[in-house]
Structure formats: structure tokens, C-alpha cells
Amino acid sequence: MPIGLIVSLIKKYLPQIIGVAAALIALAYIHHKIDQGGYDRAVAKYEKRDAETARKGAELLKLKQHEADLINKQNSERAYNAAKTYNDHYKTILAERDASPKRVFIRTKEPSCDSNAMSGTVKDTSRIGGTGAQRYSTELPEANIRSLNEVIERIEQMQLNCEQLLNMVSE
Image 1 (spheres, rainbow, N blue to C red):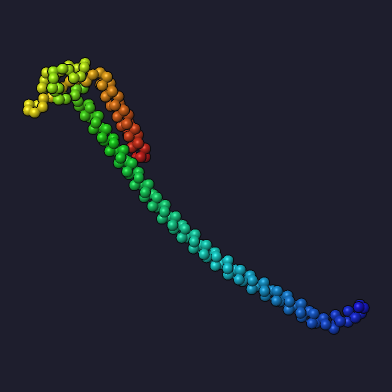
Image 2: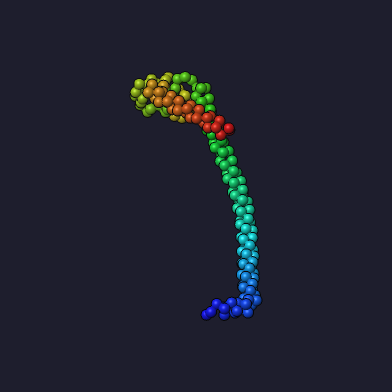
């Protein structure tokens, strides 16, 4: 096609070409605005939903933290009371031990025969009780006294441990 013909066609249809181009540009702009508006509405909707979820989550977290604090407080009180009970019990045991005489005796029923049932012990002549089965006192052998003293030392150590636990719990 000759160039002159193309130029004459452009001059003849130039207003229509500009109109169609303007209409296409306007349609593209309107389509963009519609899409942007829908996007903005969707973003606002999801931001609102996310904010509500975050608020509910914070409330739930606060509630669960409060429940955990209550449980921790109850457990601490239980531990404190248990340690105090054990400490009081061991103090009672120690007080009873300190109030007893230094020599350790046991009381048993008198054997039916006159033989010495516990080797290395001496029968005490002081009888206890009047009616019923006769009882007598005998001194424990040294090995038994040592074992008993070891148990008492372990109890004293446990008392110290309980006191330390009480101090840690009270802090």
C-alpha cells in the first residue's frame, strides 16, 4: 500500500482512532479501579478478622496464664506445707530422743525359759507391770546402738534438708 493512501486513511479516521484508544484506556482504568476496590475491601475484611483473632488469643493467653499461676501457687503451698509437716515431725522425733535417757533399752516379754535370749545382754532385775505377761528391760548391744545412731543422724540430715526446702519455698 502506498504511503499516501495510509496517511489519507489516518487523517480521515483519526478522530475515531483517538476515540477508540481513549475508550480502551478508560475501560482499563475503570477495570483497575474496580479490582483495586475489591482488593481493598478484602484486605480490610481479613485485617478485621485477624485483629479479632489476635484479641481473642490475647484474652485466652491471659486466662491460661492466670490458671497456671493459680496452680503454681497451690503447688507451692502444698510443697511448703509438706516440708513444714516433715520438719515438725522430725523436730518431735528429735525432742523425744533428747528427752530419753542416754542409754538405749528395749522392753520385751520375758522368755519362757531362763536362758539368755539375747547373747551379750544382761537381764535386768527390775520387773515392769504387775499382772499379765512379765516384761523386762535389757540394754541394746553396741552394734544395734551404732545402727540406731546412724538412723538418727540420717533423720537429722533430713531435717536440715527440709529446713533448706522451707527456706527456698518461703523465698
